[in-house]
Length: 244
Image (cartoon, rainbow, N blue to C red; front, side, top):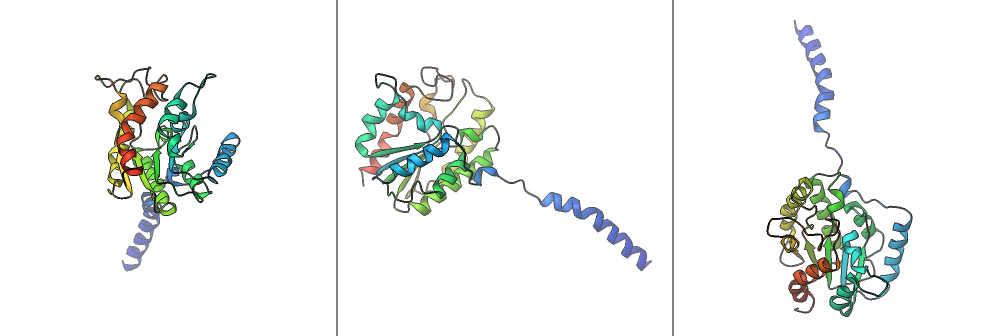
């Protein structure tokens, strides 16, 4: 009987072990794993390394929505006009790259982009490009990892963490996911180094929809959209840069 029980126990353990192991496995979150890209992306990274050889007082860090500050037409009109009014006098640098996800910003921070600068303020808005492949929890972890990295590399820099901007003409699954992200990352605000600000409502009409006058493709901002962005964060930027 004892031998039978031993055999039965061994059999059950052999059967259950793979199931238990599988239950303990946690899918990897690529949003927190630094990753690079190729081609023009690497050239932009190298350009940022060159820009970082000069003083930077305000740093904007993010994806194409941040990169878009540099947009202009042949006559010099566009978002760049808003940038030149608000940020050029503050010796600001734009380190935004189209298509970047949290893991790409993490890689850039690991490879020198902020190693030689000491900005007074870093403005971070990232995460929308993760919405198609990552959960709200994973995106939040990616943003948290970036904030942690910035605090480590720039201990004297204030961080203005912006809630991920809304997207899509009307509320949908993407907007709901990003709202969930914002609900999580707002807890990173410590009132000292990290300051959270959600300006999402500034881009929305009363019915919750987004106008093409603000976001022509319901994701990227027009010149009017960048003016809304600048106006919405200006009181906080002023207090963090000039107010101290």
